[in-house]
Image (cartoon, rainbow, N blue to C red; front, side):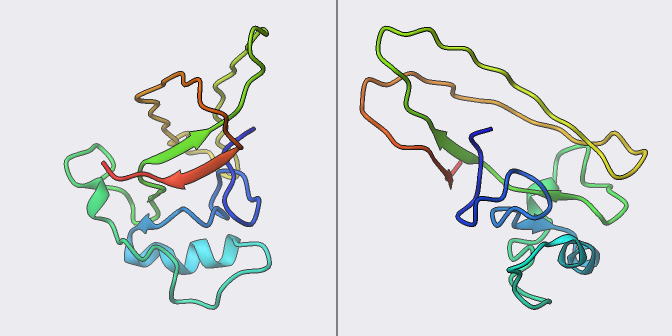
Length: 121
């Protein structure tokens, strides 16, 4: 896995980049956060639910959450084989309601280190 936040959490409700959710969901996300976690109510979901407007997730039961757009950079060995696996898992309840959107997959010859950062639209 290469998508981690600055505290090395993988993409999950513990992710420091999970900043979009419904106001009623902040207590839920705060209860799932593993230490070190900031005290509620903020900074849980500081961007609110606006990102869901115009999607099928705007009528969520109030527990929806999202990261917004992220940009991940990963170095690879020149002239070597590259294998990519895209995976998603949804555990903890019976609602299989997770979605991933991959866009603008690009190759670059620029040296890089592994990073995941918020990206503007």
